[in-house]
Length: 414
Image 1: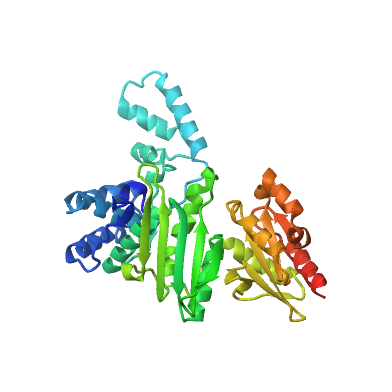
Image 2: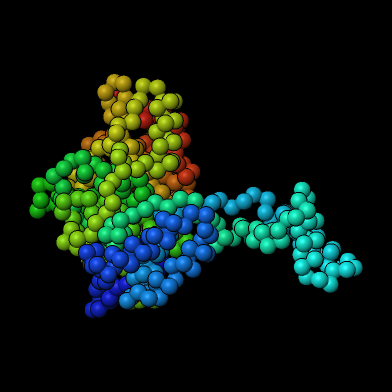
């Protein structure tokens, strides 16, 4: 993604419009190719050296801002060597030796002094190169990390990724998103809803009355959790590539950047945004994969379904659970998780569940961060649904607690 200072957009009459580029532009493709070559041939060079090599191309570009953005996206495709361990202690021994030798007699020659400092290090050969030693002193600084691998990208694809990043950038400051989707391919639709849960986003989902296979999603920001605003905003931005994979979609976002007036960003399939092909089998976050593995190992008589099922709440409203489970008896129970940025959505869900006449096989998990808020604590204590079918968790729910909740749901249904 692009940093705030690299975003290019116009803002007029309350509308925010990214300044997209033409991915077929020959000059821009040539610039993308030249910048990519720096990283393709840069194995072993430091981050600082790579940035220095790219600077002449950036300065000579018709739009240095575009060139900086392309270079940022290329840098993001690099893997740099991890920081060496024990370097702080090693640096301290060098400084101590340098201070001790500086006070010694006969150290009035700089070359002799530097060689003496280098040779004074434990296990250092007599002919150790002082310049090499000096270069290692601050190797733990990010700019000194050498390039290990680079994930290459074709020039046209890089330009498409740049446009996608321009659209994603403002979403980091989104207060509210309204998304309309229509997709006849049920496989793509399942992947999209799964992506929402993987990002730990909570959407109010309703069927679109004007479309047989359409949905409307409302996604709110994290309200007063200013410490989580950017983290949550990045999750909203990461939803855009999944949208681009659908046949028909539109997005309307209320954007509030600190240095700009509030504005509306509108995107759709007509924006011609392109996203990379989804990974085979779909990306699964580590915490989801870990939970799934532990569940299959410990939860006897239960299995996790490949994709969560959409649950009808009534009134065209739907629930997208985080997990759907099937018991050996054939019964299905679902789990929805409320994380710390879901303070606004939790009361709405519990009110809806508590008022339902029809029993829904839905278990609720709530982050303990929310249970420490006085108003939400009272809400949870007064919620019949949560008291019967809810539990609190830290970070991610443990398998044992989930199984207890699932079994409890089965007992109330029998």
